[in-house]
Amino acid sequence: MHVERQSVEAIVTTLMQVFSQQQYADKVIEHTLAEYPYWDLKRKERYVTGVYNVLRFHRKLETALGNMRSRDAQTYAWQLWGAMTLLLGEEPMPSWSEFEGLSLEALNSNLSMASDAQKLSYPDWLWERGFNELADKWPNVAHALNQPAKTYLRANTLKTDVATLQKSLKKLNIETQQIADSEGLEITQYGPLFKSDAFQNGWFEMQDAGSQKVATLLDVKPGQRVVDACAGAGGKSLHIAALMQNKGYVLSMDIHQHKLDTLKKRAKRAGIHTLETRVIKNSKTVKRLKDKFDRVLLDVPCSGTGVLRRNPDAKWHLNNESIDNLVVLQAEILQRYSQMCKPGGRLVYATCSVLPSENEQQVKQFLAENEHFKLLEAQSLFPGFTSD
Image (cartoon, rainbow, N blue to C red):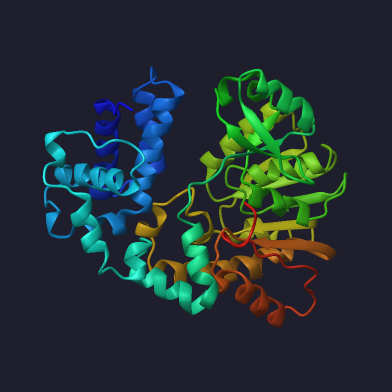
């Protein structure tokens, strides 16, 4: 297999921006792909996979390089890609000058003395916190979070059904597999997804399998009033509206106007007309809505430790203090925003974190302080312990 230099140069440039300029990988990747519109799907996939593999295993690669590591940022980025290529052994190592002095024997020798946190590529503080909070579960979870993320779609039942969507995508050689008892599809063979008629016609949304389970927990009915109070770009809001058969009222709230603007466009494409967006400007925005909703979804800001497969660079941006601050914020949101729920209504609290301090412990504390709420159901989805 031939390794194309332009693709590797793009990977190296991206890594420099992420490490040296502290930029988020998904944004840099999006910008880079826009610079190469002539790349085919395979080239794009190899570029994205190459970047994420280095980010995912950054500490392991750094440890493997040991004394070979260069202090020059550009040279170091080349070395990281070279070390990853040698250790994975999935493609040939180019005989380019940037990789002079690198050898698999030296890399493995350095790794033989590495700690578990180094080998699985986690910061020491996160490795320790994972053990403190998840005990014996943590090693399996940590390993699973190092696997590349799968891609999932949710069929928009307001416009189509799963079988029709699959048939439409198959015409473009996009193969999918249905997730049992859901409108979800896992993509097993990629194609021009966002150029498809199915996308233009609003037949699907990209949404992770775990995320698709959240809206169903609300047990919504057509005609109800529902608020998604931390909506972001609104994937769960759109799912809620579909489950309500476009009958009733969905209020999507967030502190960021630009995310709600994106949601409006998605809702229009999906054919949803029961959804309203509202920016949370201050505490009065929420206070005015006390006891107004049959269902309340609080998908709160979190560490994102449960989705490191999709955002592997996040573990290098996080720290203990940032998670502790999020725990305080989550408790405040849960306490204040829960007041929007009518007596007899249903509240769902959700995160994309694997840490109990952001999940079970938050719920336990809230229930102790709010005895008029009762726990109906709890679900924990741990990578390495679930099918996705």
